[in-house]
Length: 353
Image (cartoon, rainbow, N blue to C red; front, side, top):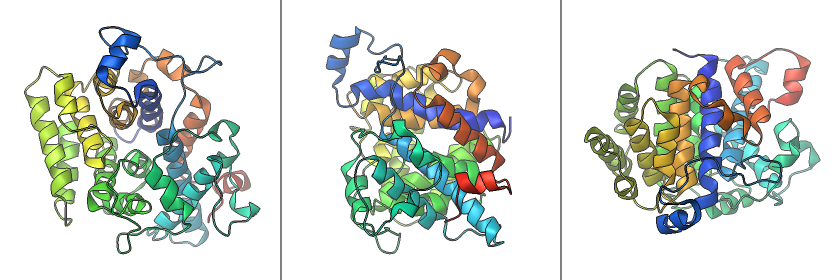
């Protein structure tokens, strides 16, 4: 399987399922999870909505706006006839994140009503405060875009890596890692945070190209090593690989990465869980979730990885149908696969600015 529509759907829906699966226990210790859900912890999707749907968090919200920004950047490139280089991709994604900020009930500096166009921001169910990371809120609230050269802060929280998987679905091999870093740096200034975004973006790209999990992460690590201050990210990835090699996956191994709220920890957990269960999507999510850390973020990244690797057909249809915003996520996945259509309807959905 190489660059198939199945993988695009798997990446977006898989990440959302992991996010929703882990959301009910995000801030719980494992002992608390056991008290609520039994000795084995969570073993099925938790019904957290009166509509019978499992609810996504800010992780998936931001992923959707990343996808929207990418599609808008492709429209802009086609309009300006610069299809080979899209230097303003990060800026357009920054504007998409400001639209996300609006869905959280927060305003952005000097933005009129015209700024809130396109179809994603019009989805009513996205307008809900889902306990977003404080770094994303405070950084975007300034209305200033952080860059690799001019960071806004020194945060290395995981708000970068939870949102950047779609970059790997769209960008080419030459640019994917760097654009992943640039998009991470919009809100988080610590190298570990934005390098984790670069790694995940590249990893998704290589899986889409048909590489195995081991080959994909190996290629991504090669690129990581060319960047300064890569040591923390590299250490987490290498530990994930070594722990997975020994077999017998355990909660202790997952928790050895820390609480999962730092970018390298969340990424390390997800790589470990994916390598432990490369052909079992649900088992990998359960491993990511049933721990005393950032369950939904670890599971969301695991879902992005294995969803891309296995494709949507390897994910239980019941999990897909239980997911809130399933139709909207599927539409985004389809549009990412198509990339661009030169018609008025497409331009209205994804204005090129």
